[in-house]
Length: 302
Image (cartoon, rainbow, N blue to C red):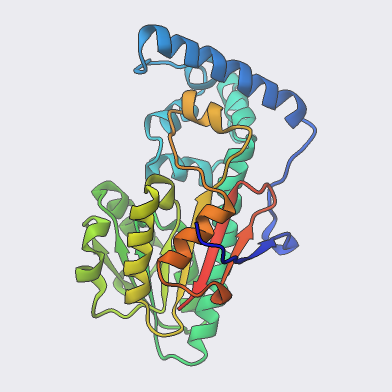
């Protein structure tokens, strides 16, 4: 493990309307532990492929069931990003609202807010010196945040070109629909390939910004280093990498056992080791933590 360190910043920007903890956490957290223990016990006895993990989560709430069945995929994130509390007044809706107050769920939405803000600042900076800002989104998913930013900057007269790279064709199809609705479809190239093709896909693109959010959680240490090293080589001089990784937290067992959502949790030290061994200078990097300190956002300049 490298001994170099990266600046760590706790973000509390009031303009981002972060979601934070509340009094309900005192009873919600013990409930998650009890249910996680119960579901883990059931899975040890009858096997991991339970149709319903627990009535109280994916049994009564159809949205929670859809999230569980699509864990690690864009569909689950799309539901989380766009949840509107109080929209469904039924009993099912009340349970959905309850689980959407988990810290891990709030932190995902906080991550979206923070990544968008970092990308907004980077786009603005490059637009002051470049005729066109080039963005590469790796494992782009729905790319909701980037599409919203592209629409925002188009209205300001800023030219942006983007490549969305994802192995999941349904994710690209969904992002194409969002892009059409936002009026930025002609600014995006959609590429249905794996991250192993990243060099071939973007070698002549020379991106100013590479965004890879929510992917390192599924890459072992050495593979994460290899991926970010390839991104480093693709970036234009002074280009910006914006990435993220989840860290250990009190709800991680619930996420794994009840949500069927396995991830690689990393400390800031482990994240520092990955980025430095990938080729970035620690002095040009910073880790920004959203208020719940569950997601670390990595911002590095080449």
